[in-house]
Image 1 (cartoon, rainbow, N blue to C red):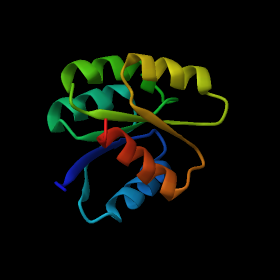
Image 2: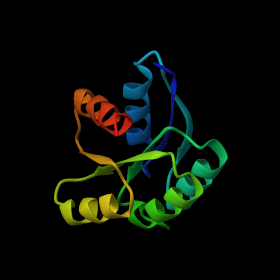
Image 3: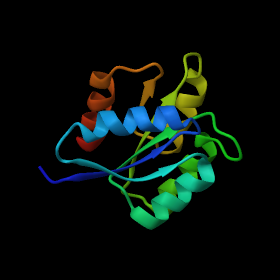
Length: 123
């Protein structure tokens, strides 16, 4: 299997670090960019064209929902996994309609994050 590239976007540094650590425990997975809001997510998508992006829903300046539409335009092959808190189901559904491929709910298990990555790569 080829190496997969990732961009991790979350306004909380702790969450970015946690997700990055989970992803990079897999030998063929590499985080090549990070962002803290929707604008940075779009810039990272344009710059890196990652295979997968994890995208928090609730962020300052521009949230993950608004960013999904733009990311799909600038990097159509990037598979987006939404990261949400409990109780954000309607926003997750909206993000999926706009082009996100899967989601994980905080606090998440490493196995669920890796499963979401497998799910989006097999579609």
